[in-house]
Image 1 (cartoon, rainbow, N blue to C red):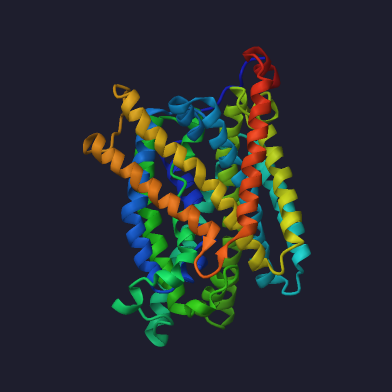
Image 2 (image 1 turned 180 degrees about the vertical axis):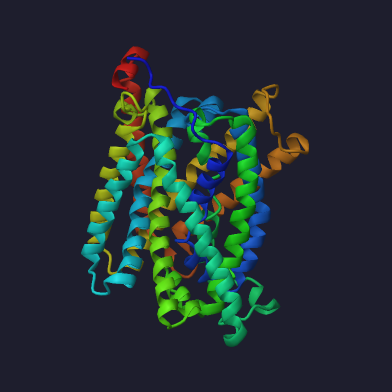
Amino acid sequence: MSTPHHTKTLGQKDLVLFTVSAILLLDTLAAAASVGASSIFWWVFLCGIFLIPFALICAEMGCAYPEQGGIYAWIKKAFGGRWASRATWGYWVNTAVWMPAIFILFAGIFKQLFYPELSLNSQIMMGIALTWIAVGVNVITLNIGKWVPNIGAILKVVVFLVLIFGALNYTQSHGMANPLNWETLTPDLGSSLQYIPAIIYGMLGFELISASSDEMKNPAKDVPKAIFLSATIIILLYILATIAILAAIPAGDINLVEGLMDTLYLFLGESPLGQATALALGVAALYTFFSNGVTWSLGCNRAAAEAAHDGELPKVFGIEHPTRGTPVGAAILTGAVSTATLLLYGFISGSNEDLFWSLFAFSAVIFLLPYQGMLLSFVRMRKTDPDHPRPYKIPGGDAVAKLAAYLCMSVLGLTIFLFIYIPGEGVQWPVLIGVLFTLGLGEIIIRQAENHKFPQSAQTEVQ
């Protein structure tokens, strides 16, 4: 059987919406705002030293090497299959562990809106149900599945805009719950470092659209434009929405799970219309949490499938639908790992807030590691493949390109450290042990796959 044909369904508008859906995260907004007014400084500062150079690198790589698999294909070109497999394993398993965190957030908001007595066990069951719905969306074709992130992106922008304009109205009569002045905006390294990683986490994902390059209409032209437009939308909304939450709730009182709805209820008031509007926006937020999980799994499962086709991950990851070409094997494995993670972490956590942060921190470290490989690949390909056509190229020559890459790598390294070691609290042993176990398991799986590589003819049979 021949390899399934990937239909060209993704245009520039789809790429912008897909990227906004992947990166613009309501779930990390409360965590960033809980830093206090100094979070505004961090958003602006980290945008300058990380988000902008990272977006430029993704734009160059995405149009220079528009190959299905994205980050996997790039690292394989630069460093070979084994390092590409390690990166893809981290990329994929992060999504399988992060999806439970986002779905626990979904369940927490659902509880706040509709069922205050909902137990943590029931929230876990809801997370498992959402996981398998997301698996189903992965199995349908992208011309249908793309609408889940597309609609999610639109609803996210709506919720962000309501927060921003709600804050403008609220502060007219109530003032700011957290004053913004030179003193409060100046960062306190001792108290704010814990949540700085959440801000960096909220800036990642510009490379995700390149995992579906075979399904794009014109990747060389559309990828850079989509990245630049989405980056502008994302950073403006993040900064203004963070200010909005800080306008409503003192930083020390912001709940990581319920902070969003607390803010909306304050802004929209206690009138029946205000409460109904807040409820409708809460439902929209619920959908965006679901679309987040779908968006990332769509990209990561495709990257894992490409690795399996090359014999770098077990062939079960490469099983595709015989006519749709969708990553059935990787999607089902995502569902299985997500379910097991929810059950394991869920029954040792005391609250949905504890469970959310434990899953978030653990998955984030796994998630950040492949980006170091991607950035090193960018530097290496600039050196070893200088004549390769690059429809978009970072201006300033190799010196500027290297500076951008090493700057991003330094920020990511610090972020990884801060997820594992929180100043004032020490080493986060559950996070560190979980990371080491996951990396070790990945090494075993990759070695097994290398020992049982199957020929191309067998690969197409599996598909």
